[in-house]
Amino acid sequence: MYVVLNIIRVQKLHLDDFLAALRVHAHHSNAEPGCIRYDVLQDIDDPQVISLYEVFEDEAAFRAHLEYPHYERWMAQSATWRHDEQRIRHVLDYVYRPEDG
Image (cartoon, rainbow, N blue to C red; front, side, top):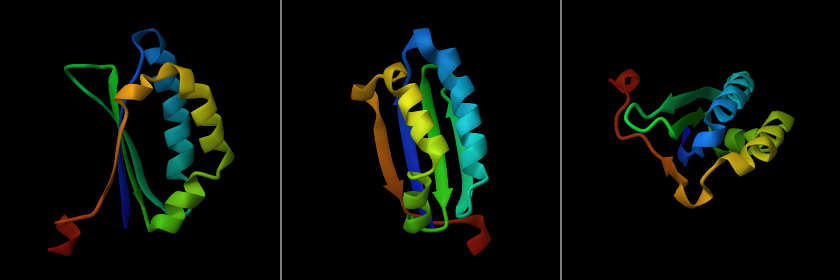
């Protein structure tokens, strides 16, 4: 599995538009072959902080995700809505998963 955690700070002025567009993007992402899950989370104490929890079958499925038209559309649409200097991206590996027992 290939897991990516993105933490994005969104400009307050654009938060509603960002979330609306992100819901559409997440819907399309979850329908991709190789995407296990694509979750969108919002910080309870700071609603401008959005986390994307992305799980793909492997790195190739993630790389394919980056080539879909809906990804390109989403990145172009949301580029000016983010605080780019406050974006964090991690690629993670499992230490424990319930299905592994």
